[in-house]
Image (cartoon, rainbow, N blue to C red; front, side, top):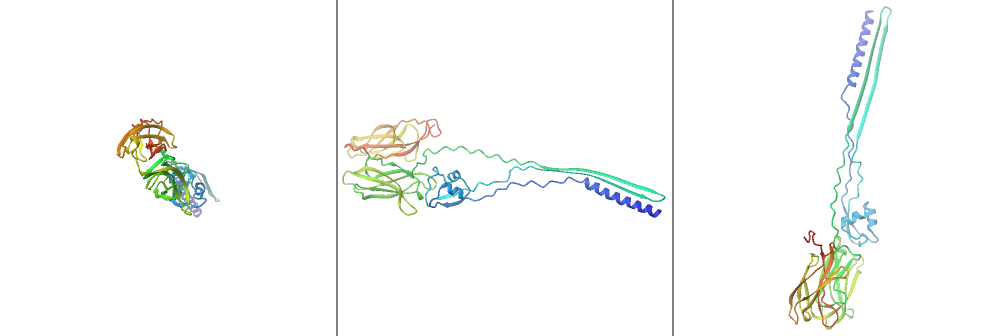
Length: 374
């Protein structure tokens, strides 16, 4: 009997220690949930692509998983249809698809258990019943607050360029079709060509080349102004043709050619327009100044739209009879918004052929009250 009682007591103690261990485990510290996954973005460095035959911005955008607008913005292309074979384009990084930037991770673990143990030992002279019940309830909750995505800064509105890209690769402002010119002939325009190269060529009435040289305008960064002069010898009044073009990087042919017909005269240039300069920003009244020697000293200062439509004009007086002197006048015009305009000054030949040595200079005029014209 004594031996049996010891056995019962030992069993009871051992079982109590087991239950105590379970209680301690159940009453431990809360278990932390695994941290939420962080968004990851795959970054790709921009690459450079050389335009091939039959390429378009649409096909290039599809090839590099980007968009036409992103290509235009990266390369400052105003006209999405105007790319050229051999032109190098910077390809922006493809639009990455991040994992959700705000991830809420919430785990709730509830463990409810009831442990019940009953040990009954019965002997002929003794009945010992040991019953132990342990009930453990634990709720473990780990919540990681969501990480809010930083607000995307609102881009600062950019003012559209005053001189927007034209429909063609080369736009010619000067010389003016049908006008009369002495040597040297000033040639001014707006272009976007391969490596910025522009060829300027003057042909006489028989089609022979009497002057030719290169100029530089806009390239991969967009349209820009070009300006050069051609010197030539004319023995009498004759018709001539000015050609402006670019040379194809693919086969060396003359492409995007612009031609205009003019008259050329013997002698030297009679009107130099010194102000405003090409690409200037001007306000009304626009000062027009230069150096001249014209028939009866008379000059005509003009302001026209980009397409040549006259906006305003005013006479001026310079030198004559072989004496070159300065001239200055002004043109009044109040635009409602920033506007591209052409400013020119020309003389008269006295024989009725038309304006003499008229050089149109492209500038940007702004309204009064703007930052440019306070």
